[in-house]
Length: 71
Image (cartoon, rainbow, N blue to C red; front, side):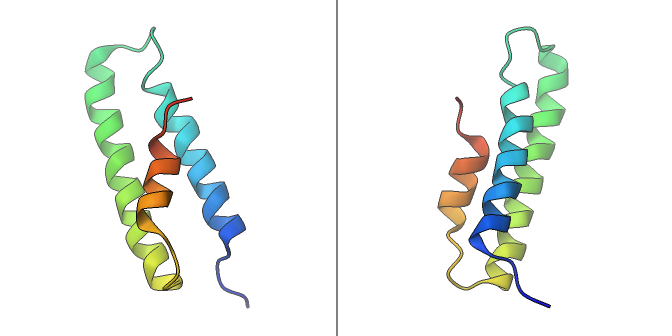
């Protein structure tokens, strides 16, 4: 069984970014945003920690930026 590759990390970041971007849509209820965005941030941070354990070359900052950048 192989380990996680850059392709895996990129795909997870893409999925997280899609969800993060939803929190910045103009029609999203502000009350919803607080909890949802906080949960997304916590999951992103925890995933980064796990990915660092999988791969010492993993770049935490680059991953979090990819998850949270606005289009």
